[in-house]
Amino acid sequence: MTDEAQHRPVSQIDSSVPHSARIFNYWLGGKDNYPADRAAGDRFREVFPEIVDLARSGRQFLVRTVRHLATETPVRQYLDVGTGLPTANNTHEIAQGIVPESRIVYVDNDPLVLAHAQALLVGTPEGATDYIEADLDDPEAILTQAAKTLDLNEPVAIVLMGILAHIEEYDRARAIVRRLMDAVPSGSYLVVRDGADTNEAYSEAISRYNQSGAVPYNLRSREQIAGYLDGLELVEPGLVSCPLWRPDTMDIGTPVELAVLGAIGRKP
Image (cartoon, rainbow, N blue to C red; front, top):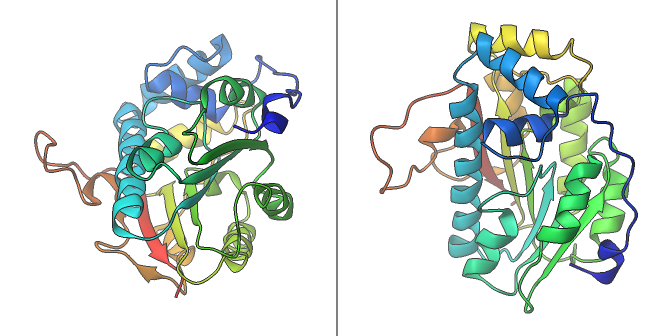
């Protein structure tokens, strides 16, 4: 991580309001959360018990997609927006474990995430790992700050895991994706994952969660999630439930379809 990132001040943490990054940390068995996060997570799980499996499948999807990019494509730069709290198998650990000179920029707007990122997201000497505090709703700020670490004239993998659903208006979410992809050259990739409106219990749990004071999460239809990938060349198997996207041969049992969709698209 750069010296600038290490010395950047952290915004004040409001522990009284649940935050999606900390709730996911709780569901994944982490300790970086507050009572409000745990209470919101428990209420959610009462309505939709599969949320723990869904959260874990999202992390596993990240591992498989970044590993694919690092081993099967020439991409050596990653812009991971809405990264969440550091845990096992973070983007830089996967990418730099395969290609040490990979460069990664993380983006999030939760000050607790920032505090942990400054301490824990340390990459290889050959590469670069940085963290910027910014909001997905301001792609210009993200691109300006990311350009201090990434060369936006060379291919970049833009990673948007479970974050686009926090943009209330779908057309705005699509516009943000287009702006980010317009800023990177041919040969760049979009990795996207988001919750789908295909499960009644999930939809009900989300509806209740959105009344908790946290930033709302908006489930999308399959067609809407596919819209983020318009104009891109989909990597096989295309847009599918995340557990079904190239499951590891070492996985035990048959992958179960969950209400979360993911894909990788290449910019022609």
